[in-house]
Image 1 (tube, rainbow, N blue to C red):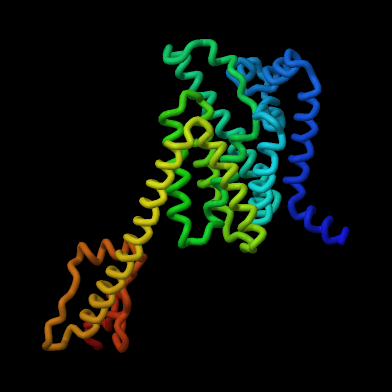
Image 2: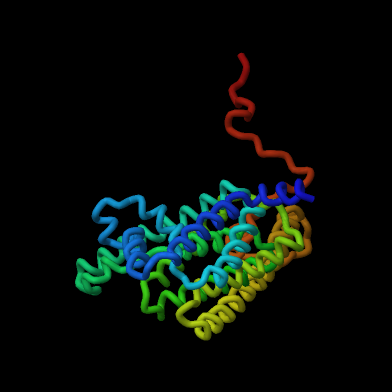
Length: 313
């Protein structure tokens, strides 16, 4: 039993290691005075002030300083999200997704804030705003699960999360909402390069449910009602796009079949209705159709293979 437990934990070793480190850091912060806590958080923050001072280490250290309330509220959901991603994509890809989301979204947000401050759209005080935690990395990991979702549910999944992220970024008053949307997009884009996942089990589906609920709370922390309405609308749009694509695929396959049959039996006296060249071109784009050779036909002779018409002496 101990061996099986150790073997199971070794498959989620990155999740376990991160949870242990974050738990130790959070417990240590709680034991300090409020003044010391604020000082440590300001020092670890990835705000414009720290980055302009050359404190590049905050891009990594800020992921381990979480200022999101009691640890028992957010740690279980975070562990489930990271664990299902690590089981599906392995440890290296989990680190890549989390790191890309955390560092990439942080830098993109910093560039946007810098431009806004220079143009006078935001006050200079925003350059010292605290920006620590794991939410960017968690949003990217959530997005990286997109390619692992079964294909029949993937359009609704993508529509839901994109709608939630965009709605929160549009109505949110904090720049972290924009960072969450950027991290989600980075994770989704990265998932297209991960290849097939290891497979789904009941345990992984359970972890996905809890992890997705945690990700939803992270993205929609500033407006649950608006996020839910936007997510439902996005999911319906995604499902409608899937049905439309299936209908177009069926229609295009039929058009291609009719075109191929008519070209193969062009000597027949009976006229066969064929699709227009515009429809055929659209079908090539939708279903990747390429012209089919008719059975029994021979390739035309090229100029290089034609017999010479020159008479022999």
